Image (cartoon, rainbow, N blue to C red; front, side, top):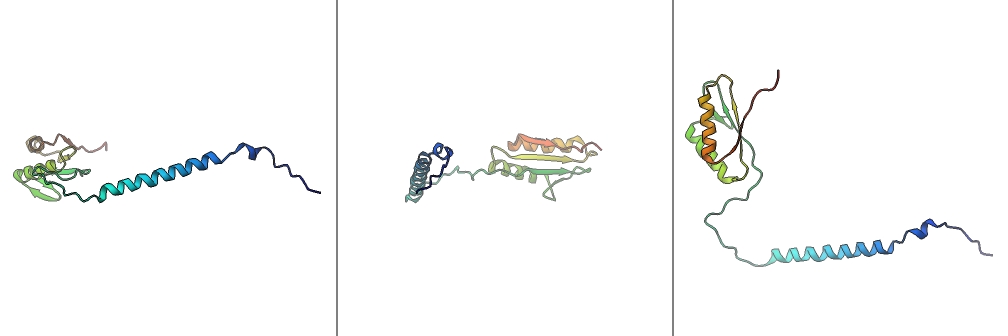
Length: 138
């Protein structure tokens, strides 16, 4: 005599066939799409050169210009003149034309002239994203 086991109705509600079909379709799609991408990179193409080519733009790091109480300007821990700072900022602006940032850290005892020189050099180099830092609340 056969024993009949009641499995319930919960298993009848889950039909996995459509889900398995979708997984296989997605797998096929990604395999085909990745193959096309490889073929695009494998084409033997001689690329032209450009005289006005610029380096690939990456997220630039902030440039910190420190001005001490005597008006000396420092970049990366070394003293720079106005001319050197102008060249440095121009090169940075050319390398990252869309997003170069300059942070000006000036001593509170420095004359405003020294800070204005740095701001003017930023404007001359085409860098519009510069800021002055201040100390926080004591």
